[in-house]
Image 1: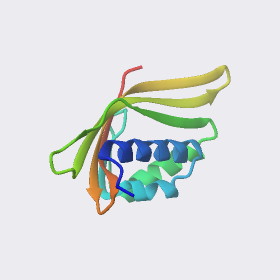
Image 2 (image 1 turned 60 degrees about the horizontal axis):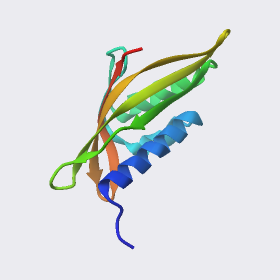
Image 3 (image 1 turned 180 degrees about the horizontal axis):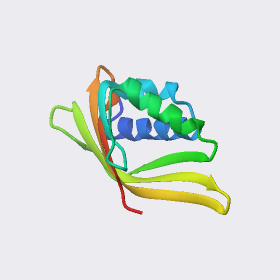
Amino acid sequence: MSEPSAETAIRAQRRRTNKLIADHEAERLRPFFDADIKLIAGDGTLIRGADAVVAAFDGQFRDPTFVTYLRTTESVAVDGRGERAAEPGTWVATWRGPRGDMQVSGRYLAVWRKTGNQWVLESELFVTLA
């Protein structure tokens, strides 16, 4: 069986991360992050390293009003060597509020790096727009 294309593999990784976030499984997200990941949250906060990113998710998941973050891939562009890729898209965060669900949304750019047969997140930038 042949290896899936980089785009197919990265889109599958994104679906898996979306599911783990919806299930509030912070520790299970760890294998998707490079140990030195750099994540800039929608408010501009820089989070460095897989431990810190997992801890940030865990803190978010402890909020009883938090529902999920949903990232929707628009495209995947892969470098000529098949080792790095850029994934732009849109994101929506949802919380339960006393008057119904509340949402914050925006755009993101994720940088993926191939490590062995696995694509991991090297960096992510989230920009809050609404």
